[in-house]
Amino acid sequence: MISLIATAISVLGSLTSNWLEGKQAASEEKLKIAKARAVAEIEWDIQQAESSKSSWKDEYWTVVLSVPMIMCFIPDAAPYVQRGFIVLKDSVPDWYIMAVGAAIACAFGYRGFNKVMGKK
Image (cartoon, one colour):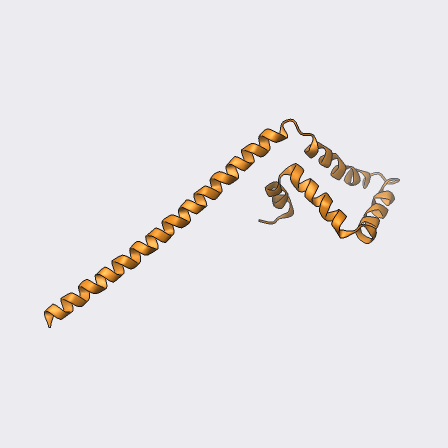
């Protein structure tokens, strides 16, 4: 009887050990994937920073996005801004708005655009 209990404990211990090893291997694989993603994101950020040194896209879009905001504080210009946004909302096709959004996202970097928009 004791031999049977000892065998059962040994088998149970072996099963538990195998299960834990499988869990550890899965965790290590997930960690490798997470590290690879982090490295890829860092490399992308470095590449974006290098390519933006000679680019004027972000400055252009900063001006374009800032002008209507500044105009809102000029009493004679505010109605033009308001009408312009109404036209954009009511008359401009969605594909155009998406194209402009994509251009802005490219200029500032997609991840940076998501941060501004409050998304992950």
